[in-house]
Amino acid sequence: MAVTADELGTQDIKKLLIKQAVPSSIGILFMSVNILIDTIFVGQWIGSLAIAAVTVVLPITFLISSLGMAIGVGGGSVLSRALGANDREKALHIFGNQIMMTVLLASVFVLFGLFFSDEMLMLFGAKGAIVQPAKEFFIPIIISVPFLALCMMGNNVIRAEGKAKFAMVAMIIPAFVNIALDILFIKYLDLGMFGAALASAISYFTCFLFVFWFFVFKSELRIKIKHFKFQFPVVKEISELSFVTFSRQGVVAILSIILNHTLYTYGGEHSVAIYGIISRMLMFALFPILGITQGFLPIAGFNYGAENYERVKETVQLSIKYAAVLATLIFVVILIFAKPIVAVFTSDSHVIDQTPNALRWVFAASPVIAIQLIGAAYFQAAGKAKKALLLTLSKQGFFLIPLVLILPNFLGIFGVWIAFPIADILSTILTGYFLKKEMNTKLNKTNDGIL
Image (cartoon, rainbow, N blue to C red):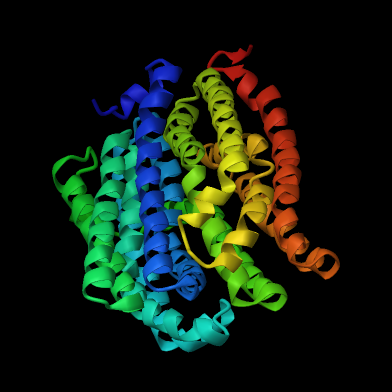
């Protein structure tokens, strides 16, 4: 049964977190499996260079579509607190503004991407033999990005309403469509990279259709024409928190540029393919932790808006506990089964030989990342944009990018892989400091004062 918005403030936290996190985790799992299988198909049926091409193109498309995710997450935080404060008219205006902001910004960025496609591909690391397959993959994908942006925005609003199961379905549908069309277009019709891109583009559109259906027939947010009007205070509040998520994606894009160029410099096309496999595994293996983080956001945001700080504190503690246990189990699996996992993606012996150890190093600090993810999410849910931005950018921006630029000069390609766990540990220490301070001050308050 779906959770109503009001139940976010009344139900038992353990049960509520499970109800929110499990569907979110399943949705992320299917999205991850979709990307994973997509990578396996292009690797096995087209070649390891195809994996490298996808690794170059996807950061561009995800950067643009993440505008929708950013507006969804940032606006979802504002919307959750509005629902928590029982201000439904504000919630409706927030949603209307989210839709308009997503359509406008995504369209502008897509046009930019189409006009400067060669320059963007080169910037993101398309070199040598990677260039041609990257071009074939890029155009159909970029055209479909506005639909993906609307899906990402809508999915976060669905979760902000407490309807995590519908958000899960929205992520499952395109996964099945993409996998089926991959088999048809790549294996049977032999359309190569263009077929892989076309399958993904159609899957994004099917996701959009489901999200559109939800808001017409199932949502509590029944917006009217009057809500489709830009309101500066609403846009400002959404933008401040959306900037946190988009900045993170922007930093991820910059990191992708630096990684792709560094990997190509120290290891050629094969090293870019190796990172392509590792990046897919990062999304796939960590799906339950990301699911808990997404399930955490509407609960924390609603109760913060309702000033139920004790419930917020309990949500933070339980989320970190559950995520840390799962992250530890995931690390153990990666440690033991790294080589057979890599062999699924490609038959290229060079890639198979080098990837397992790289994979183990990248995941080495997984047991501690729960504090960083939940801590950064808390400040976003609470509407504290500056701290949320600082902590969200800490791993990739403040630590990982400088480490990737410095360490390979001394350690070669190994310097890239060892940079990941070092950045995880440093960002966790930073987030832990701010979160502990918050728990001892703001979250020690109740509606009646200090505990």
